[in-house]
Length: 113
Length: 114
Image (cartoon, rainbow over all chains, first blue to last red; front, side):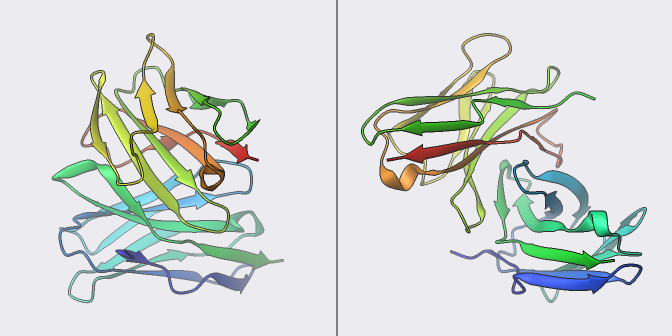
């Protein structure tokens, strides 16, 4: 049951460049999406979210884009910094069940100085 | 800054034993959650809890699991008879309201069942 997919297990990017992390979902009932960042030995940390009524949400260096017709979202980090090196989880939920957030498998981002 | 705390950070137990994982959510939060992450796999939802009762649970959360909020601050996950496959990181999370997309996670408890 892979309702939320992150097909790239890892990504390496040069410091200062753009990092693009991708996420696909299958459940058309999902109406909100989140990105979490996780460092080793820590819990996930909320980064940014987007509701299905929007196609873009921006917060500082982080921008999430949503393409509902393609059931695809992406997280852009510009410019990438070494401290951004972490595992990034895409997650999704629907308003009929706020509680149950489904996580993707994660993408490990390495930002090379 | 308020944060979710979890104890212990690492718990080792023998198969068949009962374990209790403890969490202190952020004080003004009303919704509480448990997730687990088996090594190398994704974070999986276990259960959500509101107003002293379970509001949603996953198929993983079977009869060997239970949750409780024994006082005004702690939120516990009990695994009655642990199995080897229960070995995982267990994360507690809390959110301020039902409509809050943002859940705050604790640092996790690593459970090792031998």
